[in-house]
Length: 132
Image 1: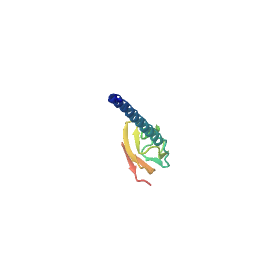
Image 2: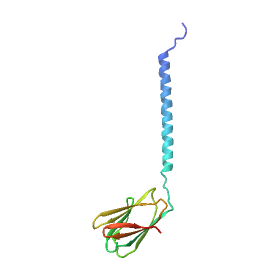
Image 3: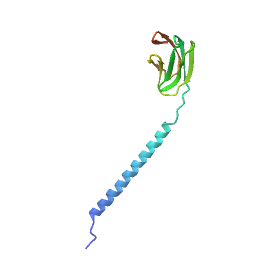
Image 4: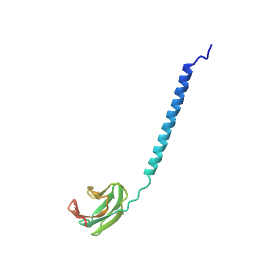
């Protein structure tokens, strides 16, 4: 009798090799994606700065100033004008001015190019003045 082919055995070996090849390809893609993600997550430095000036109406009020979720100032304003300069630290930024006595929030969007922002307070309302 000639050699009898064992087709079940050949089929199982072929499937096993194919499974190892698929697992190998998946591991390579996962490794490459994690490596690229680590390069993207590297800390990005921005050169733009924001200059925020509270021109008038804030003297004597307890005020908090936030950019995004970072508290920059939380104090009673003793005199007008009050100026703070902050380096840009995020892709998109929003300025929040909070009157601590009434917890009234005023929200302003900041440019990606940085800039000088001036604000005045009339009664309970905070208004943004024209940029310089």
